[in-house]
Image (cartoon, rainbow, N blue to C red; front, side):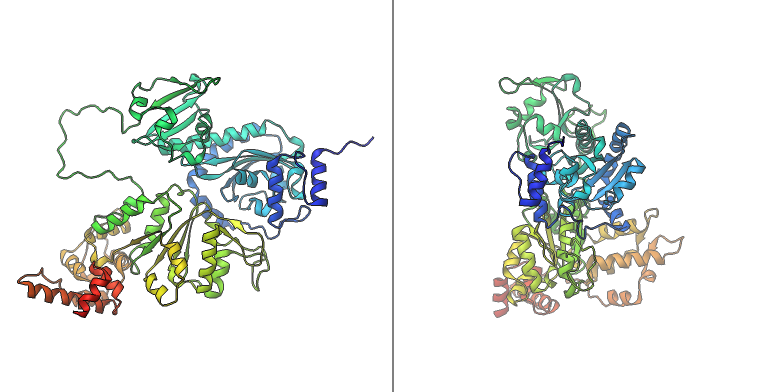
Length: 637
């Protein structure tokens, strides 16, 4: 007697014959995933067309970018592998884009899995592999199992897979932990095991970032506090929720979007001082009617712990130095007031990705360094930083490079297709350098991507949603480019959320500190210095190549030093640079005399500045620190 078809078989038959599945036949997340897979142009009985696979260099770069995730996930993966050993299975880690980063497990099953590209370097987002535990957990943002025929592609039906997302303490999705094996070895406890593994990784990530701050530990039982099964919250010193594990959010019924938006008063119904007052002993946290209380322990952190009074009071500093976080953005501050103000403005929007940043300044002022520091100091630091120099790409290739392409989209295209730089930046930061050199046709396409937050590759296919922080840079004055018709006005206003202008080196007051840091970077084991006469000439030189030129000069000078020398003199400078700085005029003395003298000196400064910028009034006004209208009026006078 033939067996009755299972609900899953009925669902697949309906999908293949009718293109839809009746409600209730399969779980709703699975039905939604099948629909997404079809929208991506995938065929259930076919093979994934042109699914990308990272080269060894690309995989190594991805592992470097996700160092924190990898370092905390590896021990957990080894633990999970011990639990499932001998069950024909693999433990896998993927990033937030579905790229498989690492795997461990049964070697025999690894060979079978490799036939469907279930190995490091392969891309397992739904777009390329259809419904699967890794890609669907990313899409749904929740743990799940995809078993046998639930996979959208029939060729993956021999697998049973359980996956759970991993988020960083700021709520950003970092990746997915997965256990995949032969469908005949399915066990319903596998999902619980992989969820526990993901929470262990989140626990370690939280501890690494917030151990020194105010931490709230939560558990249903007092004895569970301090174990890897607890939930964790991090609070700022002014009472805001600044970090959490998934377990911590679930215990309080919160969502990831509440990180950075919820206060102590909302979470616990009291102010921070009262929350800290009882000390670090475990205490109950009452909940709603009919719910058992949670247990919590509040740890005030190093900054709020009472400190022993020293025997001798330390000397009072001459000036109060504000505390600065030790991150890449703070490391760029070398003492110049104007540049420090620029960094302070950047920090205020550091984790507000809805505000695009436009970096302006002359070539060599460090726009690319600032863009990288912004990314490294943000909550997206573990996600990709993708830099594209719009001026360096040929006009015929920039479209394919940015937006990606399907296999066979044009002559010479890779048979595997390409995701494109915009999609590679998903979850992280996209840095478009020299945006002013982007062709007008590409500007229109970029504008559509920014407005719709989705990108369509060359050669067709369904649009793919993208999430990235946008940072652009240009040495051109984009307002002037708009006026000249070379840059789209609508795109300019889309990019110009906050403009940060980097001062040229000749206008900075931190030349000595910059030189000292460059010397230390080139020769960390040597105490090098620059001769006082050379330093004086450096101060008079205009540095047309800005910080980049200075770095090259210091690098070359250090290379030309003999082993026993510790001072850079004129002998270590190139002939061209020696002639240039020797001919540099000393800075003008401060103005003296009556109003007539001051006006003449002001007019002379205006003429010099206009000559230096080739008559560009906008740039001259910026350098002089006055409005364009003021400068036009002085020119007319």
